Length: 331
Length: 200
Ligand SMILES: [Zn+2]
Image 1 (cartoon, rainbow over the protein chains, first blue to last red):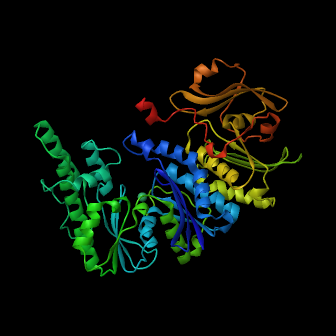
Image 2: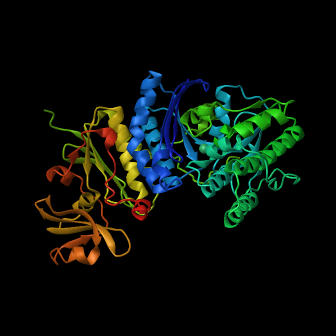
Image 3: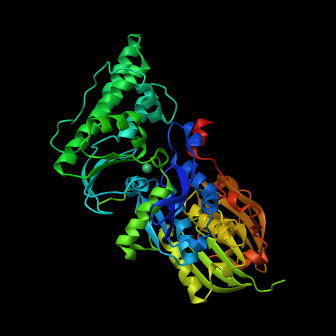
């Protein structure tokens, strides 16, 4: 079965062709990162304009790269939400036009389900499975007992972890997007400041990063005012150690409690090298998987893979009335 | 030359949805939905149902006319994306048409100002004269202060803010502009985004 995935939930227009929910034949990602860089973050109206500008080119390249035609496509899977509504609607309506034209089923996929299924490309999911979802918009622990079955164990009460990274990077005047910069500098610095680790020992699986973020920003402000010298790398390292301590500690605790067979990490922050390292070091009795780097950030291959499983599980989920939902719930 | 073109006209640039199927200048199917603001849900199922009714497929179409604004209402991108995809999938000629023209076509007055509100005393407006169902553009699409614009037109002109387009006037008035590079087709926003304006 050939599935065409379509993803336009934020600032990447992406179309992918995936065979049998596993083999990626093409995954074209048209990134707008250079455009939004000038604004220090994604501007929704500009993102929408760029999506409509690039949409047919991305479809064209995905088909050519995979060396297939639209006649070969059996199912189309498109991100339904969450995300920027104006951006979502472009992918959804482009996908619906294909579904109408070829009379093939269309399924709406939850963006986070996509991120989770990015792991299924290089590694078979085994259940029960614990997913740590970490990105600019999400920080969640999700338990899966079978395919396309999601139970949220806990989530951030304020900032998403990627969001906190971006804000710290901005304060330190690092180039946008800041997350990878902080990660890189952290590898050069030392944990000199021992920042607090909010909620690390709370009985639930919730997270909170805004207090830590403020703490880091305030200290930076004070040092600057007193004209004290400090190494940006030490700042990054101290912040990263605090964040990854919390993430790994809570993931490990949940994995034990729910006796999972594997742990997967999903979302843009899954590319973070400090997190990858600590996960592998601290958790040795349960296998931990990360998506390949190219499938950590937003892409349509992950949407195609999740869409395949969603359709296998529930073929009646095909729906031409599907709409974008900026606050779509995963469960 | 083929005499009876199969034509689709599509406009989602305002709060209403207009979809029409024409055989030559004859309207076979038309839908005009106002005020529901659910373009993303409705447009494709609506089009599918209309095509089925007259046993057409997208690939049977010879021409698609797409309303491209002006304006930056989210809806405009839905219609434009759909038209682009149709043109991408099949060798069908795509024509752009001003959504203000489509609005004006709903009226049979001899002088028409079509009007889409843009807040802060501004509007997207255009000024047409009409003779025997043929519209001629006097002032093309613009975004301007309402009073300033109206001072330039005849006081007898009818101001049209809503109404179901009469699609055949696109053909009689030769208002479609053929798209040469489909991939580059974008709506006519007529203004840069607020973020770009602030950045300067
Ligand atoms: Zn994402």
